[in-house]
Image (cartoon, rainbow, N blue to C red; front, side, top):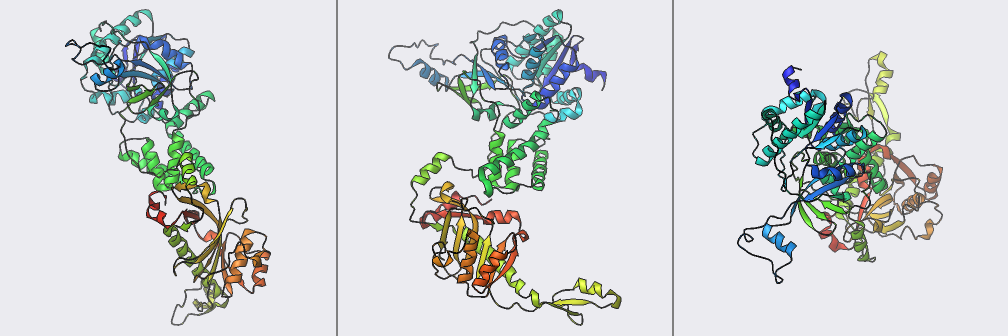
Amino acid sequence: MTRETRSLLRFSPRLTVLPVIHGSGDFAIEVRRRMLSEMFDCLAVPLPPSFQADVEEAIETLPSIGVVLQREPPAWSNRDEEGDRWTPESKNPESEREEQSGGPRAASYVPIDPCQPVIAALRLAREERIPRKFIDLETAVFEPSARVLPDPYSLKKTGWELFAAAVLPFSHRPRSTQLVARARNMARRLHELEQQYESVLCLCSFDEWPVLRHEYLQGGETLEDDAVETTERLAPTENSLLFLLGELPCITGLYERARSELDDDENLSIDGVKELLLLARDRDRSVHGKRARRQTPQKLGLMLRYARNLSLIERRMAPDLYTLVLSAQQVGGDQFAVSLAEEAREYPHGPVLGWPGIDLSVGVGRLHDGTVLKLKSRLPGPPLVWRTLELKRRPSRERQKDWASRWNPHSHCSWPPDDVAIEKFRSVIKDKARALLGLDLARTEKFSTSLRDGLDLRETLRNWHTGDLYVKVLPPSRGSLDCVVMLFDSPADPRDYPWRVTWFAEHQDESTLALFATDFSKELVGPGIGLATYGGALFLFPPRPITDVWTDRRLQFADTLEERLLAAGCLHSQHRHVAVLSEAPPGPAWREIARRFGKKLLHVPLSQFSQETISRLRLVHVLNGAQVRSYAADFIRRS
């Protein structure tokens, strides 16, 4: 590092000025490290003195997030200069004020965010008993400035001096006269602080830094403060934290946890993303239970690589929320992406009790009394951009209750795409079971003119000394199958699968179906659309009418749900063999049921199919009438 690079941050032997990216946890950590490794006896921050009392009091409430807000005077129109005055017949002054100014009043605010470098510095300075000075100019109407800057994560590799030196060539002359005036006033205040303290640390933004340096070398100037309103402390709502905090609320919570437990937080901007994925996986499991898709370590690793590549394409080192949710959607599906988005908004600490609330969005806030304000941050981070990502999220409980109240219990039908998928799977199981029929008659013969059904490696190696090749001969399968029993969850708890029904085919391409599944009325995904999870199912193809499996007295001997389906399959099958898909091979009890009806079970292991495939096939949508099919696709998630 050259002497010139060092001098970028050292304005004088007594003054160090550190430019920061507001809202960056990486810069907040670096500020803390600097303050602990060097001796400073004064901290100067780019905020007006009118904010100091409330900001420092709000810092005491951390880790609860707060907002210190200062309203700006209304922007009156030229009508006032022309002599218009309020009369008793006029409108309400506040509404008149909004109409004349073209909208709601404006206000500037300071986010009390532990990942804000300025807030982190003030927090540490209070703990270390270091004097704090708010040196910015009082401005009645604040003009924020923010621009796109390099990814803050690169600070860990370059160091502060090299990072600042790389940014400096891309700094432009300020367009705002207010920014120049503020820098001139802060420069004068810094000269005054140098006379009182031996080592002063000043924080500013990268926009303010070159202007502040120029004005400092010119000596600065004390300017007259504007008359401003008093500040007020507010508590943001839970849904507002995503718009208020510089980092994701979940990541901010991890920073606070590491701080309280004295853990290492140097790489939380990246390691926190990994923990966020794990928390989202746990949330997905707790919300969706057995319907949650398995998110294996391999899939989570693929999500991280996907997010990394997207970030590099957008010239960033760390992913933002949009990149993370898009990666989760592409790899883990809509359901997991929604869980990730909801988990990213979670902040483990509640609001400050007793403070008025405020609901924030991008550039707008609504106070507890309904007043709407245009908001400008005194510590603005990189510009925010709205980006759209279509996700089919879980409906609220209120909507589900409304849909449940309109449900007609006498009209049920299936969703055709579900029927097509499960019928195709039934055909696959049937083909695999038929292949098992001829395995007992398979033989091996010496190769002569045809490879037959493939080379028999075992027999060929056994006769390696003779130099002969042996091939397999699989005779055509004998017999046929018309019954397939699928047992996805065995042993099945009857309390988990209260919905038991026998459905008849609507056309000749469908099977007669008997199933046990979860209660679809507990999971409504749309108006007249319920979602259940198969525990087990019986398929008879070609379709034919049968007695309801769950009320048939001939099957009363069965003790479990699985045994009842197996017994029904053996009873109604017109062939000698019944295909059974299950995790474990049929035990003595199941084989005894088959012998009772003169049948033989052909076991197809569930492990031959991916968990991803099985999880999707187990989902069955129940529609409240055939008319629901016209719009069901708008509410049903297929990912």
